[in-house]
Length: 75
Image (cartoon, rainbow, N blue to C red; front, side, top):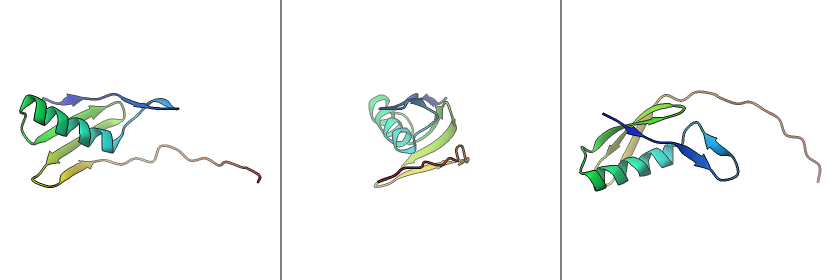
């Protein structure tokens, strides 16, 4: 069993993942549906584990390099 989450970033549209959003979604789902305090969150970019402890929320998962670029600008 897992929580499905889709990420929409204002100005960018759909993105692969969001750690803060995964934590918030897990805590909301745990509270609303009385789920166990450790949940798997599935996003387009992969899966993370979120554990809601007494005063902490712990996010665990893989991190992957997805972009490299250069922006040139003048003042």
